[in-house]
Length: 590
Image 1 (cartoon, rainbow, N blue to C red):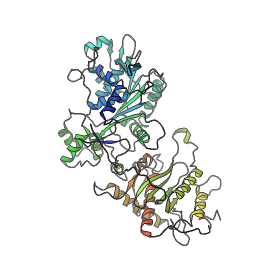
Image 2 (tube, one colour; image 1 turned 90 degrees about the vertical axis):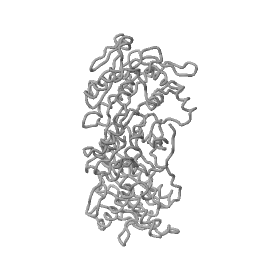
Image 3 (cartoon, rainbow, N blue to C red; image 1 turned 90 degrees about the horizontal axis):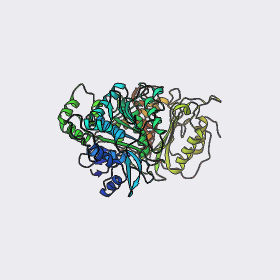
Image 4 (cartoon, helix red, strand yellow; image 1 turned 180 degrees about the vertical axis):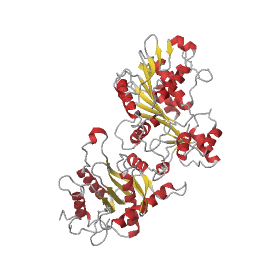
């Protein structure tokens, strides 16, 4: 497999030069580097064991009864999964294997579970500079799914991979809900869906199956959380871990699969300060796949199924074209792409394809938009250059769980970031939407004092005012309909939202000038955004008013583009010198 690069790839992805597939597994192109990885991994020994090259019985194919063989992509995953560092610690703390339907996820998950039950998967030291793996003393492999029946299905596949010789050699007692090693009591079992009864199990390897179905409402999120807690407390010698096996998730459902993808994307961001220890393996059709033509479908299928040579691509193409198969399901299940829901503001894959890692130099002319919230939604400061390169300047979100119960947006931090941006760039236009939230102390708008001070301090430096006119403001862009001039501001914002959506949703080669910096937060907010009609056209909004799936960075992106368009056609220049500050918009400063 060779690699190609693209400025439009999401962080962590590369393009397979043969098929055009988008791939995420961090597999190097350099043969020497691949050899180095193999030399520091237990993976090659695990592969040899499963494929009958160690002297001990390995696995069999459930359908043919022949000796088991991994695909090239599965071997790469195992080499990385069992990669150890110089201290003997596994390089990856958790993993995700995502693929289209029929690419062999269940048999591969079963084979990994069986290897953890009887194979040489536990690090025991180095010999001549290479890691040595041994069988675990008392393994506990658990599989959890959205339902017990799904977990039983996977265990049934796992049991079918043991031949008579292996069952006798290892002393295996294979059952419908658990397979037991008679001599040690080690087992491969279906875990209960009860959070309480699973808590505390001494798991050595956890399988989360079909995590695109595991959500808060189904109880799957809690089961996944228990599985991760159970492996986190394992002794260092055990190094227990969890691996997910999933189809592409539906955006916006907040499934376990979606959360894992977002966590991996955050790790891939250039500014991420921690260790990149999530192994995410996905093979996807290119986002520009044309699903309505036969050549387009076949091109996409050859990419998504490049590691599944047994697949019947013509049959899959027919399933994609079936009127009973929605476009979203076609993209998710057959192309392994992340489909948008029907009311999505923009096509998520097309927005992703516009990501471009680019640095905005100091003193670049930009427009800024600050979308404010007090506690429930996020507060987002987004910038846009006059040639429409969008970048995240700052986003403040309510923390999950109990930490967010009393959280309020940090006004001092937000104010500091706005002022820093004003100093760093040549800001031609700054718009701030304060939102309706009131301050608990004096019933004024929560952001009124900050906006007043920014109004006072920068009115002499901003060549274009956010709300021009005799009673206008250099920074306030208040979209509350109860305020004077709000109808025009909402019209202007809505038309910009329509233009940005048109740029993003355009066919390949026809896309507009918009590019964005690959920010995982901005990406998530854009993916959350839904198309919402209003009296002026179609804008963007949340799923519901009370939804926790915030979109404020997407809103601020539209506002920043709006400001950049105004600045681009105004012809105005940055003012020379300083004028005497005046009163703020609400008269709170002077």
